[in-house]
Length: 352
Image (cartoon, rainbow, N blue to C red; front, side, top):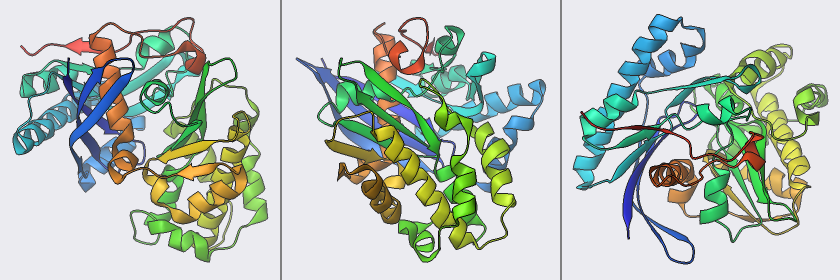
């Protein structure tokens, strides 16, 4: 039986809402076919709202949760109408405002009820909270999709606002964790030059690595911690940004140095996996300079997939997680998050 699911993803790099419509079916393994996809860029008001949500009080956050859910619902309805879709499920990651599993909480906004009502479709959101309540990191969640949808690769690397890695160890247990901040920092630096991102890494390629800055970036206890572990925007705001501000060097040099930081940390993470094909997805897969440095630091065969996988893999996987949740199947692995047990996680909202 084919099930059609729309996946919605808003990442920490604030480059908009990824929407993907996917047919899933299962025989001896899971299969998928992407039917439609789109990216809805945030206007400046929403960029400001989402980037500052970390500082909001409870009442303003509640209002923003509803308003953002309404916007997601309206944009999804337009997506459905433009492409003449008939989804069985909508799975929405929402936008992360807080992620502090060490303190026992995580928050992704975007009212599921608003989306369900506007689109007249079962909607699933809040995929992370249950895992955090069970003592897990609530992240990363994409590894379940990596394991079941992309099993032909030795390891999967996603480079979005945060870079994360996923692979099976020698016992066949899925291992995954957030490696380091990625496009959050690269895009932040690019905006200082009036650009949304560093296309193909052109600016970084022109820069020179500042060894002192590189050492400062690498010298953090997070990289010494054992997995499972995860990162949120708080790390960028409280750790990465102050380090940048300590160095009065060119933006190009900061970009070159941070690219090397990502490549070094990815190389360290990949040491836990046997050599083989590495699938790279996320916006960072289009940064050719970054990919070159990662290849140099890992020695793996790099596979860059079709552009719709590069851009929409996370949205695709959340569509898949929504399907698993609707069928009450495991969609979060405790081997990845460190929770007390696996879970079938996500809140289900029915249209009123």
